Length: 350
View (cartoon, rainbow, N blue to C red):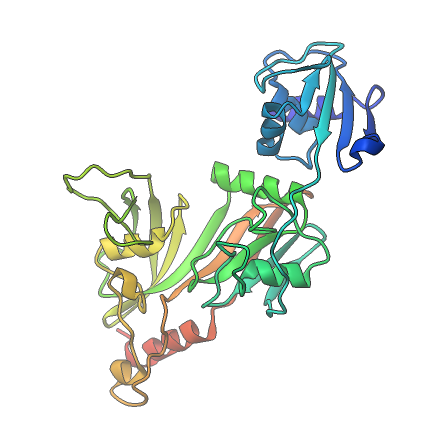
């Protein structure tokens, strides 16, 4: 019913007119819509999103709250239900300029079309800056390499739809236009996107597969760290976190795991693996350790094979935001993680 109503609204073209603002306000686009028929229960914000797919519902709600949307010459609320004959005028300001400076940072592109880009993110690089003066991020690289990029709702995150931890590798999506950005973001919000990770954990995992349903909270004393509160008496703000895992291969003292987060909490997979007693190899933050070739084989170099958590975003499945067709993108394992797996297969096979 929802999609049908949107389609009905999108056909209201005969009475529609869109024009640029007058010379005193050329930066603002003014769009006029005349409602042909009332859709019972259809809120103004949802009605406008059906008519203006390039704008997210968040942006539309902000415009309504700011008074940039009028009905019959008067500001209104997002919950207003348009009536037949209503004249709706939307004043759309230009996107906020971004302060992000493009930088010639290589991107490992594994998929690209006119609307989005998928990269195989490398370890050691963060997704976007915390302040405009910060550089060396995926956002800086995207600004340099792409002819067009989405603005999103944050000028410090152009194109960035979702994030991976600094030292997590794998597939990551970047939007080229605002419509693609908000449509994929909505899939993340509704949890219809399927993300599959692989990682190497320490110890002998008891079950071949299981679901971890354990809420996460910010650590009360350690910055940028998270935990499962457990039986702590101190009240903590928690968020539901669910991870499904499956053992792909077993080795002596280690396991190669497939991990599918059903929620998208910060550090979720790393905390959950640590919580069940099997931290990620290389994840010092949550109880993991560095391992050298000598540690695993009794010979060779004593330098760590991998100096960060061995977690890789292997695959993402979603609906293309514009074409509305299923899309599955896979990123090959990083060289360092592959090297550890090869050594475990040769020297630690059960």
